[in-house]
Amino acid sequence: MLSELSTDALILGAGSAGLACAEALHKAGIPFRVLEGRDRIGGRAFTDYGLAPELPLELGAQMVHGRHVVTHQWIREVGLSVRPWPVSQRALFSVDGRLCRLPWLAFPGYPGFGFRSFWAGARTLPRRLQSATAPDVSLADFLEREAPPLGARRLVELLHAHVYAADADEIGVLGPGEEERRAAEEFGYRNFRLEGGYTELFRRRAQAFQDRIHLGTTVRAIRYDEAGVTVEAGPADAADPDVFRARAAVVTFPLGVLKAGTVEFDPPLPESKLAAIRRIAFGQGYALQLRFAGSELKDRLGDFSMVWGGGATTFHRPGVLHRNVPEVISAFTVGREAASRSLLSASDRLQATVAELSAALPSGFPVGTVASTSVHLWPQDPFARGAYSFLPVGVGPEERQALAEPVGRTLYFAGEATEWHGDSATIHGAIATGLRAAAEVQRELQLQAGRAPLG
Ligand SMILES: Cc1cc2nc3c(=O)[nH]c(=O)nc-3n(C[C@H](O)[C@H](O)[C@H](O)COP(=O)(O)OP(=O)(O)OC[C@H]3O[C@@H](n4cnc5c(N)ncnc54)[C@H](O)[C@@H]3O)c2cc1C
Image (cartoon, rainbow, N blue to C red):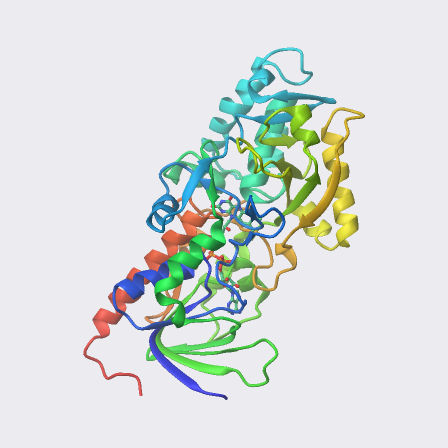
């Protein structure tokens, strides 16, 4: 045991939820420390500034989803800005070797598409999904039963695969439908790119309390009772961890880390919490950034935002509507394919990705030369173990609420998977949970005020 450090609150993890919680406690004047296993803050928000310095590239969270979410306020307050990212408006869909833009899918002439198909995919099916009744089935079974036109099926699969980072046979219908009803804003139609990148956003937000953040401090054990919390944490390779004591602790680890059981809870977490950890699912995904030599794609395809050929990868173009930026494609691969490709060598992964892009383009179309790449493989990352959470068959948002529930008066929970109002799997959802946990801790510490200080 190297040293013993006491404070009022410990925040475990310095991602969006942990930093939002820290900022709120800082403003409230409550002493706290943040313990973070990585050598950086931001968690699943992580920007690459090296591949194309003119165009910061997101390896984790890609966009700001929605016009009114709290992330915009966070961005404005630290002097950064956003730019609209017209994902669907300028998307190209590959249909039987032809590329077409979204509105044109509504017109006959594209096999499997046409007006009926477009309307079914954009309106009828999403509404039927939202009003589906028990028993719950997987999205794949639901689509099988509804037997929509091919184009409609493709549109729905595309949206769901990327919202949930999972395959259609893994995603439930009732749970996600309830979440969509609860969400404050319709998901997916208004998206923005954070100029400057998420890493810079969190660096600026944390500036006021950076001396309270312990980087390279991996939590190994959390021992708690009604008197307080003792956390053992330190560099991953250290024989003896440091010991941190506090009246309360906020756990913000990703669901993947909680599922893996690499952090010991003593006493073990209650069964309701363990059941929630088991039942909520954790999706897989990563964005492989491809920097091309030259801008052949833009020259030939115009200023497009995305290409999708029906597979596990959507090929986003972060430089859409920018002038004079290098040609970069963010290949966002999700689901089982992301998990298995993350195990490949870098060159085999690149080859598989370029082959998928090539298959989405008309036959003989030159893909161009990939000059350099960048990626963070979330499925292989011990501090994430995947991308973000989703509700599988038979699981509703009440499981997220059970995950968020404090244990006794000393252990609190935040992080995107604990968001039960329809905004899980996002930065703004994670921020909201950090603020909620900060309020819970503050209330408890106020109740405790007048008790003897920690010895
Ligand atoms: C590829 C990808 C694309 C995404 N796209 C978007 C998007 O476009 N828009 C959007 O809004 N959201 C997106 N998301 C989701 C968004 O990134 C997450 O919802 C959000 O970052 C989660 O924040 P969090 O604080 O809950 O968790 P995290 O950011 O994961 O923070 C948890 C922290 O705990 C730390 N930790 C874990 N284990 C330990 C331990 N034992 N000891 C100490 N520290 C530990 C981790 O290092 C991490 O810093 C995306 C995510 C991924 C992976």
